[in-house]
Image (cartoon, rainbow, N blue to C red; front, side, top):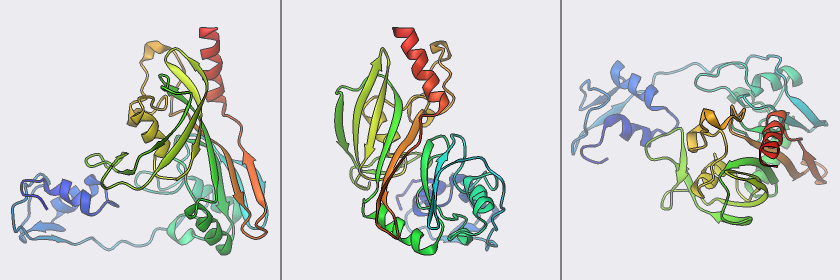
Length: 298
């Protein structure tokens, strides 16, 4: 605790699973007090302040099975390989209690491991506006085995993206640790002292004035890794408003989301250990932008 630091900022650092808005409401309701007194969210901490926190008890939410559209690339008794459309949230959270991929998986499969924690069969995740391949486990054993494969980096992941501006090299590798942004908890950032090891390889496939199309290989799987690493190189993902990829309207390209697609996934089957590889085709919105860039600069 630093003297002079705002109470809500301090609490966000201590309880990263809660948003500042949620913690702010707890301060205002008196569930969080300083020296047993009611204070405001912007209260400036002083040396030797005693902070008491009481999180209200919440009932465990249940997951509603709902029909949700997503592509199926492969299915057997152990797993499901899907093509997640852009705009689909993976699992329930603040502001997204229904209409998620998790709801759709429960509707499609009927029963999946991990349903109790609202993540039925979900081994890994993609951001809401990132499209492409995801792996879903249908049994407890498959969930555990595939989870260990991701943890031990036995899974290969390749993405394709349209970036703003051109990278300085046609191919390269960036190693920079990633952690939660010190102020904006919705963002991740390169944190040299507090981040987790993260490595990303890229290869430029095509370039135009102000844009390039790149293939990205992830060596690790940190939250927002590609978005953070590419932005740090001065070439954010096109359409990524959180990391500097916003385009001016006069550019005239139909970009309504971050143009990032999980195109290929290679892993070992949890039962047979057979090596499997699947590819999800580039979505229509990215294909359209590529065609427009070709037409504009041909």
